Image 1: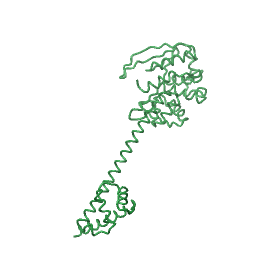
Image 2: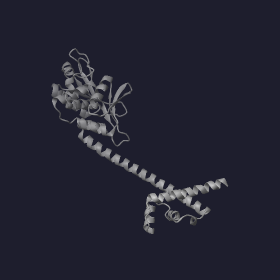
Image 3: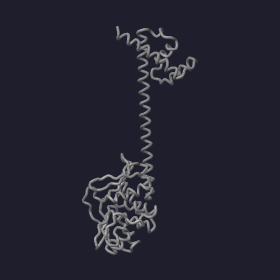
Image 4: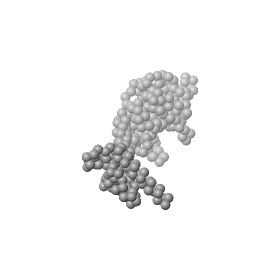
Length: 313
């Protein structure tokens, strides 16, 4: 079962107030229905959703839907559940703010449909049940979308979403309007908002595991980069020391510089901090990382002078 189907199955079992159910059903019909004078027809690939829509019609309007199962000829091969309502058509469409009393389609539902925060959440739940989908957080990218037919509806849904600071965006795709969320935290917030509690727990568990894994990888990469940098620095210092030894001899250097050369050759892969601690411990004379770095800068200057003199000769 897909993550989208899991979410919709959970949402289909929620027990809400009448006004919330009206808002949810309004959103579902506005974005799914085909209707004429004689019937309203809705469709979904989710059996639980079809049963919920049927129940809402029965509970609110005391009408029984006729559900027909059709085979889906598309590649996913899921059944299509066609929900047909043949009673109280005009009353239902007006009450759900799909059409006005003159039979004209309303581009936006009337205010009473989304008059409270809970009704806004219910409307968004209905839109998702009708046209929404979400990537499983186990996949490589976070993505939740609602694919709508009409621009005005997509703008309305985006406005409702962004009341909750979800930062939703709209993108036109195949002559439809995709309202989408990309940020993992915003997707989680949306699932909380529409009350998909079990889906949120699953989503958060996977998201945290992914982020921990990514953090571990970043730390490992950072650690490896630091190791590579230390090794490169050590090799450069050893090359400078070897050059000085070949051309002048280490004994030519003053005692402090000579000491740094001896310990670098003795401990060729230790970091500057570790080397300063070793020298302090073994000689009984404290030297800081900064002080040791100063000595190696002197060694580099001597090596550079040798290199320049060799080029000039």
